[in-house]
Image (cartoon, rainbow, N blue to C red):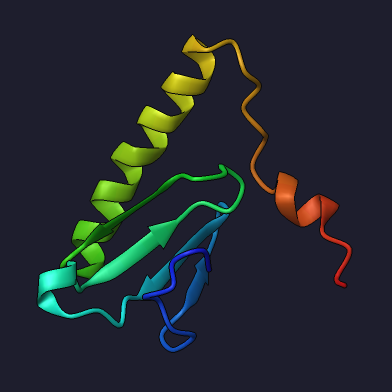
Amino acid sequence: MGDPGVKGRGVAKGGGGVTLARADKTADEGGGYLIEFPDLPGCMSDGATVEEALANGGEARRDWIAAMREAGRPVPPPGAEAATYSGE
């Protein structure tokens, strides 16, 4: 995971290229859950609860895709990262 505050505990890979992790942060650092979209580099969000992280993540994903399209950059298809991962 790209965030040094996220530990390996509580990480769940979801369908559609979503990673949801329990953030091991203090309340001052935001705490809660981090959601990441490995197929969309740099696209992530968080929330105090799983439900909030998922809702915020949906908004972050929509905004990320809109920004890429506005910039004329390609949006990778779902699963693109998994298709190119060599396992090494």
